[in-house]
Length: 447
Image (cartoon, rainbow, N blue to C red; front, side):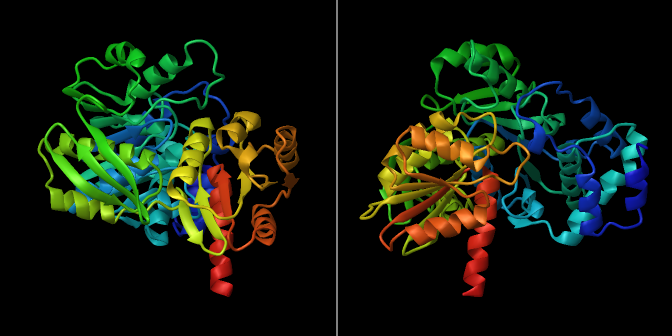
């Protein structure tokens, strides 16, 4: 049975066939609410029969509880601006699976993605393993980058680090953005345990760029990362020195071990993006072992776009999408709303969460008690918290709330309630943000 799906696909590598093959494999992103039974053995076997493509180019490997997707895109922009051919692998996607694999800033097209997945399918039986959905996509990305002969791949960890499928690669530069409460029950020394697992991407000889500033975690990280080439720590070796609101984003001054770059415009909302920019610049400098130049940095950051990360998609009322999927992300969203936006009306929230998050904690971190109205929705995921459960949690906090299960219908309801001076914030799970983005963009096309 192991190779039957792969055998059927071997002669037909169009994207619909490839996606049917992919969907026939367990999707831990959709079903795993906790970390258990993780291993790299399947991924090692799969990559071995593909010729270990992950070793064909240097890798900048990025992990962290929040901000890793933004940081990956910033690093990729800097490396591209420096003239390199750059492969970028991120997860999850918002609207199309193609978003996960990109070359020089352009997502993979349907034909190339079908072929990349088909190449993995063709060797599945030879590997003697049944890979997961994420392992197949990760192997396909590594192989595609090797076929393109990229100069470097910037790779986002899917979950934690040590046993993530991406960790069959050996990081030239390993990045840890931060350590927060996610994929944990919050008991005991959870921060140290998470930090240790995330630090598993740091390999002997890696340059380690550490964005997590908690000094209590330094001994844990030092023990977990022996024989590194260097360790650069945010606050000591690099930092965002000035971070202020500008029209359409932030204006920041960045300090690295090799340079100072002042008045860099980030077309992104949220003070946390200044920290991500400092981490990204440090990672790029560690990769090159030299400063990049003020003009290159300024131009690269000015071009960064982050769909679904405090993205303004409409006006009158203002509509913002932000994948604040955990407590720390919700707190960052609340701060961004307070610092970057001047509101004359009310905030209308559309929120959907996955299991493993405490709805009350997330809503409190989001300052949802200050909102004028909350529409709870059900993310399109087997791990979804049902909309009525989330609405009930909101009402217990004194928040006027309504349950509308469908994400598009929840957005429609919020827009019906909102006045032209109000702000509609669609947040929570990326499944919600992606579904809402599709719906809102479809409205614009139909208008």
